[in-house]
Length: 510
Image 1 (cartoon, helix red, strand yellow):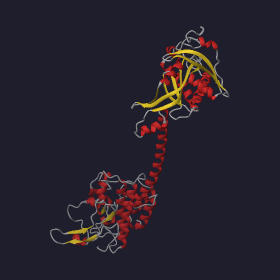
Image 2 (tube, one colour):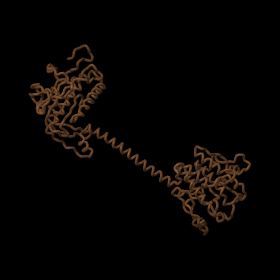
Image 3 (cartoon, one colour):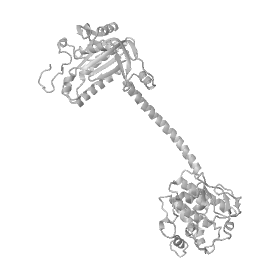
Image 4 (spheres, rainbow, N blue to C red):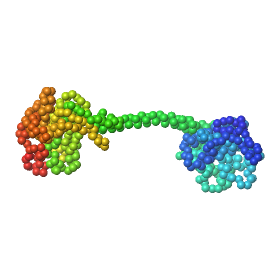
């Protein structure tokens, strides 16, 4: 017994023969027996675990059948121990004479536990004094009953579905006159056809028809599509697959993360200048910055108050969304920065947050002409017969720019230049671009722009100011609204200047 060494055999180290502690000394298996594992409802065994357990048992039985012992004779779940690596090691064989003082099993003793005979072959049950060492064919039968119990994860033995007493079950198993020998039920849903056929051959009533463990081992290997019969090999294989899959998942998630980061950066860049957004994300404060010369654009819708009174709130929102989406697409082609929109007011600046020399005047002027061109074909969704009229004002000068607020911070412009640009817009006329003296002078120095002096007007807070109309640009082949001198005598800013009254279609426009 001490010389039997195999990875699926529990090592026997010796005995303690000193009363009262007479005992066998064997390797300790941390997980207990296979019976304990099956009866532990917290442990859910998958197919690879079941196959691995069965494969370990078969390997151990092959070793015993080739050893001097020749057979096991007492194979059942309680004699299949499980170590800390979830490897099955066989025990309960040999030393029968030492443990029981005789060479055979006596069934004449009282208080016999018949449930411990479920795994004994019927030909051995019929013997009055069966051999304690059993037979190799009897071991094959025992394995088939144990394997069926393992496949179905039976917690109360292989015949628990019969609901009969153990002695009655044993009497039916060893009854030679039974037309159909009693065996546990098998279903192809739990395992493959080959495994079902193999188990039925293993518990055949005739011992000669039962296969050897070499055949059983081959069938079990074929039953595992991956060819890994060891739990350790299976776990290593799963870890390799998991690692490879994890790399793919990490790469995919990284790509998604970068994509989402780009979306966030893009959204942030629409609210704040990119370099300012980076500073805020980094937790750094943004200091206000002075710009010597920038050009500011203001526009609003003529008669917007009256238009709102004739529209529902949803229609107003739809109108502004259509209009400002159109404007946003136009400014993409120019070196300008959209500062904000408040109601019908649209504010754009050039020359900040990145300085561009004197080009800011030209960028804003050309952009303004494109805005007027867009008004020619723009349709009001809920008033398709009406024409929307835009009023535009430009001014050039110094400003201070900085981020204001912590919650929803805004990039704001401060200085007299902002006020003057707003005054240019409020004193403008429908479908006209009203520019200040400084803006006009810069455009004249650049050249190529069609400017007409409007004359001297009174600007609130500034007194008398000479202003100009921007009428076009040389080489800019776009259509512009007709420039009529009589527009000078239109009603002041803020009056309704729609072409027709939506409620009185036959009345003339004001």
